[in-house]
Length: 216
Ligand SMILES: N[C@@H](CCC(=O)N[C@@H](CS)C(=O)NCC(=O)O)C(=O)O
Image (cartoon, rainbow, N blue to C red):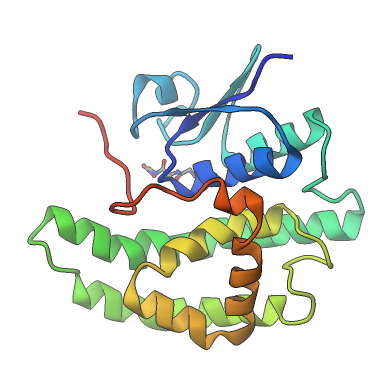
């Protein structure tokens, strides 16, 4: 079987998610580093977002779809449980994180820092203050969710955790995010425990601003 090729960036949280699935399952893959909107991405993702996957004749976009494909096509530990209740709980957390929390924590909070670098170099304080209550509320929801078992779903490491960990890593880069995460005691312990996993260590983003460049 040919090697799956992930096209994206080591700095992208969603690219990291699919790389972590490969690492967890022991899949031999390649990462093709690219920029947002590049022709390689546009050839597969209609909006030029990352990541995308090429594997033989299979071309896919959307991290969750790519992760499902990898989980079903390759041996190694299952990251999407087959039990109906656990499988749908994974869906539930992936959906909430991707539709609500990513928007709050990354696209609103963290981007208030990243975007500043391209404007006058100062973070957008008004945007940061406005989103902080939601940041704290959402980290609190996650804190309660992982309190009992140390996982989002059941008592095993699933795609729900893989999908969340790269977001938490980025949130810690900004001061209020780091503070809110350490105040969420169970979530902080969860982060530390899973950050020690080889799949997380093998996919640490390179140093530098937590963003990507857009071509053209
Ligand atoms: N729902 C998509 C989200 C992909 C996504 O937004 N990726 C980011 C990089 S982490 C991106 O391409 N951002 C550029 C944009 O939204 O235009 C997925 O799960 O793959």
